[in-house]
Image 1 (cartoon, rainbow over the protein chains, first blue to last red):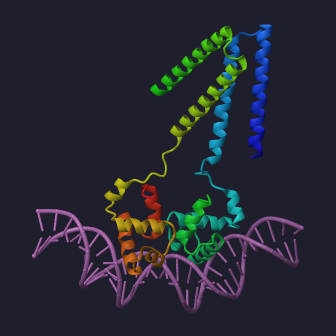
Image 2 (tube, rainbow over the protein chains, first blue to last red; image 1 turned 180 degrees about the horizontal axis):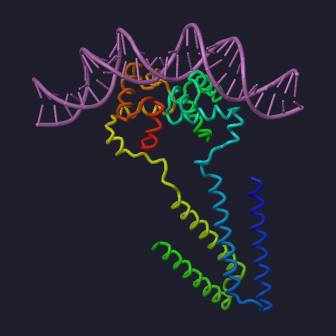
Image 3 (cartoon, rainbow over the protein chains, first blue to last red; image 1 turned 120 degrees about the vertical axis):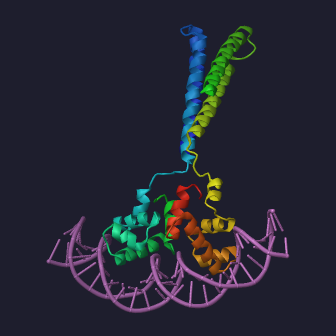
Length: 136
Length: 136
DNA sequence: TGCCTCCTCATACTAAAGTACCAAAGTGCT
DNA sequence: AGCACTTTGGTACTTTAGTATGAGGAGGCA
């Protein structure tokens, strides 16, 4: 909100400056009239592109990028996060254990902790929640 | 590619027209100088926003689109696909049954069929496969 | 009408998943 | 060294998930 006001303030300021500049150049005859017009056109074209890009970036759904800060905020440990990733690709506890060279018991412990931390009832739900949180 | 050329052609044309217009108005004195500048600024600002939006839209990855043809190819029935969607949001068989007004037995049957058709061993894996196939 | 497919539901069973504890070893920090 | 936390693993138990099989009803179709 604050940024928007500042941006538009600067825009109006630039507009006024251009007004004055154009007036001055017309009187002194230093610059050709077409060049002033072209300059104004160019500047505002660039401003338009820039502002639009910024606003679109804000509205864009942050897809693909993993939010590591959120992982910390959820208190997920490295191991738990590893297990969560394996769950998301559809492996069973036994398969995860074999893949990470751990016993099934250990995986179960991790899974239980993951479910608590993600506030999920099932591993399927945990995956869904994790994806919503941009964790996966 | 063709569109880009046409667009930029039109842009240059507009620029030239504005040049001529501004010259004319200066001579005739019909319009004030500031207004011409403001007009040019506004027009090119809008052009900037518009062009940028278009180019960004093009570069966007066409994600999120569901491939209904693939659903047919997999022989997934409507009910099975419905159940699959509920699985993907992390519901248990009982919860799915309550949501669709069906017994848990029915859901289990559907789930079993889904697993066979998607060549999955677990519901978690089925979700993963379905997402890879753009089914979800 | 008979056939076929889908949908529904049930029973009985096996296999995973998940919970609740407990406990030991490792790690990092002070 | 002592503390806090993670990682690992175990036992015992409950709850879901998944398989196998059968069976009746609904709708489309030749």
